[in-house]
Length: 277
Image (cartoon, rainbow, N blue to C red):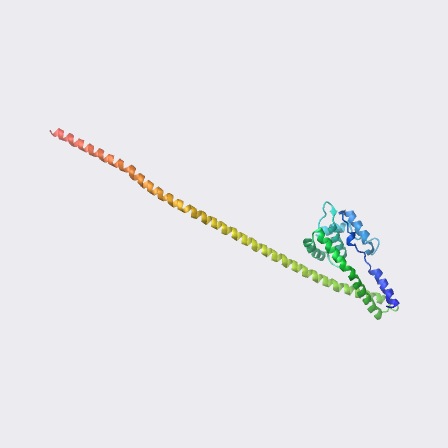
C-alpha cells in the first residue's frame, strides 16, 4: 500500500470511528431519566455532529414510550433492558422511520423480554459488529479509490467529494431498501403467525363448546330416562288403588240401601195384610 492509500485510510478511519457502549458498560442498577440521558451522552459523545447535539433527550424518551418502542419505566426508573432498546433506537432512527423501528423491536420485546435474553442478544450483536467494521472500512476505501481514479482530488476536489458522497449515499440507500424489505417480510410472517394462532384458538373454543353441549345433552337425556319409569309406576299405582278403593267403598253403600228398601217393602206388605183382615 502506497503512502497515498495509507493517508486515505487513516483519514477515513478517523471519520468512520463510532463510539459504542460495551456490554460490560451497561449499568447493573436502574436509572432515573436524567441519569439515562447523561449516561448516553457520556458514552456516545463522539458520535455527535456538533457539541450542541444531544444523543438522547427526555422528550425523545417520552415519545419512544408513547409509540411503544420501549415499555414504560417501573416507578420512573429505567432498567438495563430499557437502555438496550434505547441504544438500538439511537442507531436505527438515523436510517429507519419510527414505524419501521417499532415493527423491528416488537418481536424483540415479545419473545426476548427477559433481562438475560435481552443482554445476551446485545452481546452477540456487538460481537458481530466488531469484525463488520473492517468490512465497512474496506468498502468505503474501495469507493474512495474508484472516485479518485475518475476525479483526482488534486485536480477536481469538489467533484471528488460529491462523487464520493453519492457512492456512499447509493450504498446506504440500497441497504436501506433491503432493510425495509426484510422488515416487511418479518411483519408479514408475524401477522400470519398471529392469524394461525387466532384460528387455532377459535377451533379450540369451538371444540370445547361442542364438548360442553354434548355433555349437557347426555345429562338431559339421562335425567329424562331416570324420571320416566317412576312416573309410569306412579300412574299405574294410582289407577289400581283408585279402582279398588272405589269398588270397596261404593259396594257396601249399595247393598245397605237395597236391604233397607226390601225391609221397607216387607213391612208395608205386612201392614196391608193386617188392614185386610
